[in-house]
Length: 96
Image (tube, rainbow, N blue to C red; front, side):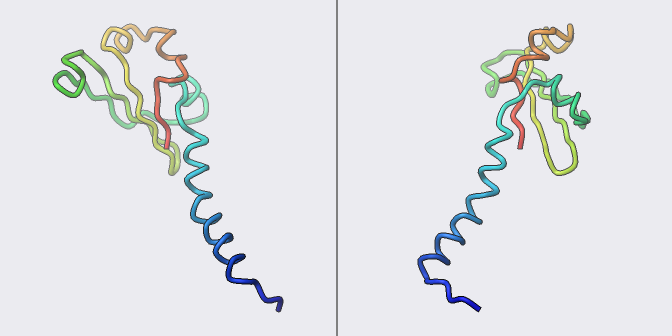
């Protein structure tokens, strides 16, 4: 069995530790419609208004597909009217 120098083991361990983080970052932000098209299911819809939203009426929509979770934020009027612009906005949902 070949010997691996300590520096090689450290580099390998670092690569393994960083790899899952890179996979998560690759998902980042995506459009609600693309998530639904990929098989994500809505798990909850919550109305929020107050300090956390600068007193704006907001809907927080949580989706899940297998081990991936997405949280999407919509202005109340956009969600109620299912605004096409909001549903296709690539910065609307955070995916992990």
